Image (cartoon, rainbow, N blue to C red):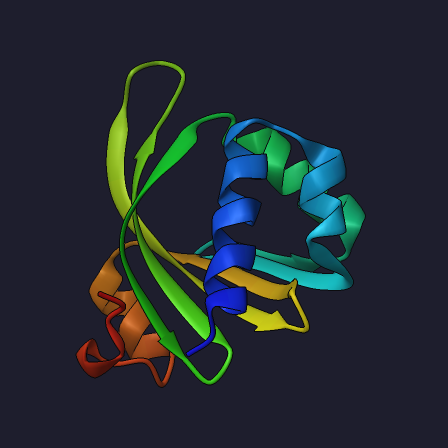
Length: 122
Protein backbone atom coordinates (compact mmCIF):
# COMPACT_ATOMS: atom_id res chain seq x y z
CA UNK A 1 0.00 0.00 0.00
CA UNK A 2 1.14 3.50 -0.69
CA UNK A 3 -0.24 6.71 0.68
CA UNK A 4 0.09 8.08 -2.86
CA UNK A 5 -2.65 5.78 -4.17
CA UNK A 6 -4.94 6.70 -1.29
CA UNK A 7 -4.19 10.43 -1.67
CA UNK A 8 -4.95 10.23 -5.40
CA UNK A 9 -8.33 8.57 -4.80
CA UNK A 10 -9.23 11.02 -2.01
CA UNK A 11 -8.35 14.01 -4.22
CA UNK A 12 -10.30 12.47 -7.14
CA UNK A 13 -13.39 12.12 -4.91
CA UNK A 14 -13.01 15.68 -3.65
CA UNK A 15 -12.87 16.95 -7.25
CA UNK A 16 -15.90 14.85 -8.24
CA UNK A 17 -17.93 16.05 -5.25
CA UNK A 18 -17.02 19.68 -6.07
CA UNK A 19 -17.66 19.09 -9.78
CA UNK A 20 -14.14 20.41 -10.41
CA UNK A 21 -13.61 18.95 -13.87
CA UNK A 22 -10.17 20.50 -14.33
CA UNK A 23 -8.80 18.75 -11.24
CA UNK A 24 -10.70 15.55 -11.99
CA UNK A 25 -9.11 15.36 -15.44
CA UNK A 26 -5.66 16.25 -14.07
CA UNK A 27 -5.92 13.30 -11.66
CA UNK A 28 -7.08 10.93 -14.43
CA UNK A 29 -5.13 9.37 -17.27
CA UNK A 30 -6.18 10.53 -20.74
CA UNK A 31 -7.48 7.04 -21.51
CA UNK A 32 -9.26 6.54 -18.18
CA UNK A 33 -11.84 3.74 -18.18
CA UNK A 34 -15.14 4.52 -16.41
CA UNK A 35 -17.72 1.86 -15.78
CA UNK A 36 -20.70 0.74 -13.75
CA UNK A 37 -23.23 -2.11 -13.99
CA UNK A 38 -24.78 -0.36 -17.01
CA UNK A 39 -21.70 -0.11 -19.23
CA UNK A 40 -18.27 1.42 -19.68
CA UNK A 41 -16.56 4.22 -21.59
CA UNK A 42 -13.06 5.58 -22.01
CA UNK A 43 -11.29 8.96 -22.06
CA UNK A 44 -11.70 12.44 -20.62
CA UNK A 45 -14.84 13.20 -22.64
CA UNK A 46 -16.48 10.07 -21.23
CA UNK A 47 -15.32 11.09 -17.74
CA UNK A 48 -16.95 14.52 -18.15
CA UNK A 49 -20.24 12.93 -19.30
CA UNK A 50 -20.16 10.42 -16.43
CA UNK A 51 -19.34 13.10 -13.81
CA UNK A 52 -22.12 15.31 -15.16
CA UNK A 53 -24.59 12.44 -14.81
CA UNK A 54 -23.61 11.85 -11.16
CA UNK A 55 -24.45 15.32 -9.79
CA UNK A 56 -24.46 14.03 -6.24
CA UNK A 57 -21.84 13.52 -3.56
CA UNK A 58 -20.08 10.44 -2.34
CA UNK A 59 -19.21 10.13 1.34
CA UNK A 60 -16.33 7.71 1.72
CA UNK A 61 -16.32 4.79 4.11
CA UNK A 62 -13.86 1.95 4.42
CA UNK A 63 -10.90 1.84 2.02
CA UNK A 64 -8.94 -1.18 0.82
CA UNK A 65 -5.64 -1.11 -1.12
CA UNK A 66 -3.81 -3.89 -2.94
CA UNK A 67 -1.27 -3.66 -5.81
CA UNK A 68 -2.44 -0.31 -7.18
CA UNK A 69 -6.14 -1.07 -6.74
CA UNK A 70 -8.13 0.99 -4.25
CA UNK A 71 -11.67 -0.08 -3.31
CA UNK A 72 -13.75 2.53 -1.53
CA UNK A 73 -17.09 2.04 0.19
CA UNK A 74 -19.42 4.97 -0.57
CA UNK A 75 -22.66 6.51 0.61
CA UNK A 76 -23.94 8.34 -2.46
CA UNK A 77 -26.36 11.24 -2.00
CA UNK A 78 -28.33 12.60 -4.95
CA UNK A 79 -29.55 16.19 -5.36
CA UNK A 80 -33.16 15.03 -4.84
CA UNK A 81 -32.32 13.68 -1.38
CA UNK A 82 -31.86 10.03 -2.29
CA UNK A 83 -29.10 8.00 -0.64
CA UNK A 84 -27.65 4.70 -1.82
CA UNK A 85 -24.73 2.55 -0.78
CA UNK A 86 -22.14 1.66 -3.39
CA UNK A 87 -18.44 1.02 -3.79
CA UNK A 88 -15.91 1.93 -6.43
CA UNK A 89 -12.75 0.16 -7.51
CA UNK A 90 -9.92 2.38 -8.75
CA UNK A 91 -6.72 1.49 -10.58
CA UNK A 92 -4.03 4.07 -9.76
CA UNK A 93 -0.79 4.27 -11.76
CA UNK A 94 1.80 6.98 -11.09
CA UNK A 95 -0.66 9.20 -9.20
CA UNK A 96 -3.32 9.02 -11.93
CA UNK A 97 -6.61 7.14 -11.90
CA UNK A 98 -6.53 4.90 -14.97
CA UNK A 99 -9.82 3.12 -14.25
CA UNK A 100 -12.82 3.47 -11.97
CA UNK A 101 -15.76 1.07 -11.80
CA UNK A 102 -18.76 1.68 -9.56
CA UNK A 103 -20.38 -1.38 -8.02
CA UNK A 104 -23.71 -1.77 -6.25
CA UNK A 105 -22.03 -2.94 -3.05
CA UNK A 106 -18.70 -3.28 -1.29
CA UNK A 107 -18.96 -7.07 -1.60
CA UNK A 108 -19.38 -6.77 -5.39
CA UNK A 109 -16.38 -4.42 -5.68
CA UNK A 110 -14.17 -6.72 -3.62
CA UNK A 111 -15.32 -9.77 -5.61
CA UNK A 112 -14.48 -8.02 -8.90
CA UNK A 113 -10.91 -7.29 -7.78
CA UNK A 114 -8.14 -9.16 -6.00
CA UNK A 115 -8.73 -6.98 -2.96
CA UNK A 116 -9.78 -8.70 0.27
CA UNK A 117 -10.73 -7.77 3.82
CA UNK A 118 -7.05 -8.22 4.70
CA UNK A 119 -6.31 -5.10 2.59
CA UNK A 120 -8.42 -2.80 4.77
CA UNK A 121 -6.65 0.51 5.51
CA UNK A 122 -6.74 1.42 9.17
